[in-house]
Image (cartoon, rainbow, N blue to C red; front, top):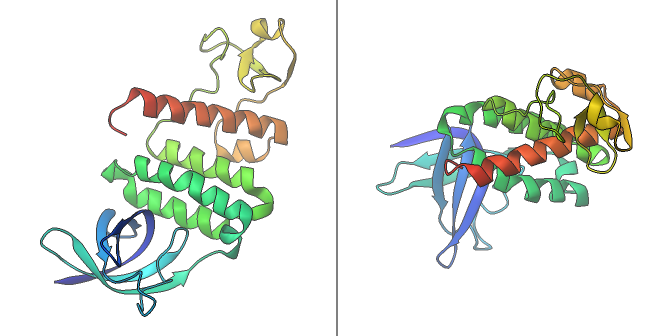
Length: 222
């Protein structure tokens, strides 16, 4: 039995002398593992058609232990993802995507997110796309941090209008009296974030990174 899908890899493992085992996010089958036999051989027709950041049309055969990629054709990619900044973006985020994709329920939405982010990525705006991807991954799983919480006294629901210039975290007005701060606008959604200045976007990205670190350190699920 064979089936077809559009996929992008989020993990690969060298196997044997010439094979690679891939973990994919797909358009219609969620997260799947499949082996590409002989793909490391210079004569392989699949060689160069499967890579991080690339969306490929795959034909797969159902296997006893693992599905087998029988055909692969590259269909979409973004040149900017293979620039110096783009490769940095890919190799820092693909392991993160793979860990979040352990939640099978959200894999279809994650695939849609990757398609948007990977295909619109611009190397001149590396940090903005890094922020976009991490925000979307957290939002899909309802894990976004509370931007209304003071990161110094940890009180929620207080008025937040400043951020610490040294630690790049939002703080309440009371804590802001003690340290050097800048203006912070609490976002309600990603459209709000896009309107923030560079300094405030750095704060958001820092908070997202802290949230991700906390999730992975506190939960065996990931």
